[in-house]
Length: 512
Image (cartoon, rainbow, N blue to C red; front, side, top):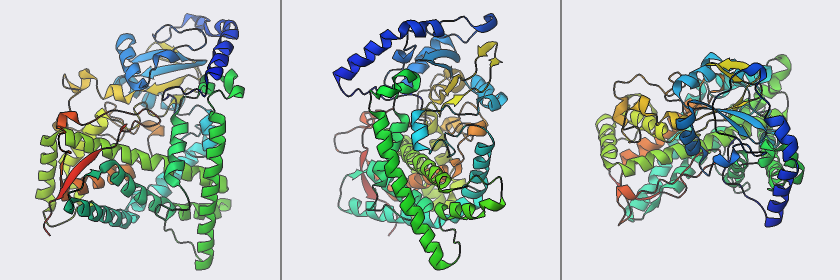
């Protein structure tokens, strides 16, 4: 991810060395960074840049909020300089449509970062791959093979089984009147669903999958100063190179073991059985010599895709689910209305089934409203321009990074009225606003060529988790905590999860 958690320095000595290096090269950098725009063309407005660091000091610990404040002063298309990297921040639906639809092909690529090189096997997956024939083949693979409607449907029994186990576990806690760590329970059920879909197994004691994936996300979302000031890369002043190498080795060993086990199982069965996504990818590898457009040419491609899926599927679904749950606890009126819908449409003696989801219109509104206020990736993944271009009269030069602040768009009073900060799902009543990338006032999954290919799987998972927890249980806050006191602190990184665990007291409410 482009933007950071707070900068972490190993020691005061490294800080001194970094400052010394900054200023010893500052004169050279000033010569290259304060040249006038070519042909006098106007660049987007933006704050003045400091020597060497540019505008990095303005990002703060929650950059989506800092950039929102800056955009209110400089406009919806704003220019920044992040170290040596020119950047454009987009903060309105009209501007987002220009960058993500009208001129999508110019901004369809990803910047290369140190993390993407280490963690995506040289950008051989889909999330960080540069735009071109390889990426297009990868996108086609995801659309037709991995996340097609029939494939998502094929994994329905897994979701059903895991959710029923989760309900049973929480029911036992409810009988004992125990406070439940909702963050932990939601994390466990979604992890098991995704692991079974992708790897064909639940959490495995041999691999600390959760820790490895979280370290991957942490490194991908951390502020690596070497990405913005490349002359500092050899010094590794933050220790990221060492961590990236360690994490990359753990990932490779884990995925290699999993792939080998699938190959051995298939050899015993003497046929390809598409039980999970690893099996599907191995089938693609077997058939690659007959299809030039098949991007799965070797095991490295498989590992890169698996890492993208594990990193992109688990924490995103967990993060969204917990923000929805948090909003419901904080807004008892909305919770009761959702539970009333579930009771009327599903009944008090039945568990929610996937076929019920299209009828649960208020649940759909609750999820939309949560994603408006708490998009899982508030700045999306950064894009990079592949040519010089003029948009709205502003000159955007080649290799500029584009940051789309969907968090700011979701709070724009010009779109959402004066109560833009309020959690009010009814704003979507009789509304045609969709969240799949066509309506630019609500694009939590991005839009255009780089829209999230696994969006449908993620939405089904989130809606099922929330529907089961709200239908089967009444939820109360721990004694002494009022709805107004529900902690909503954010933690910045590649995603924006809750900073602290969410706890609540359940009581089972279905007919026995």
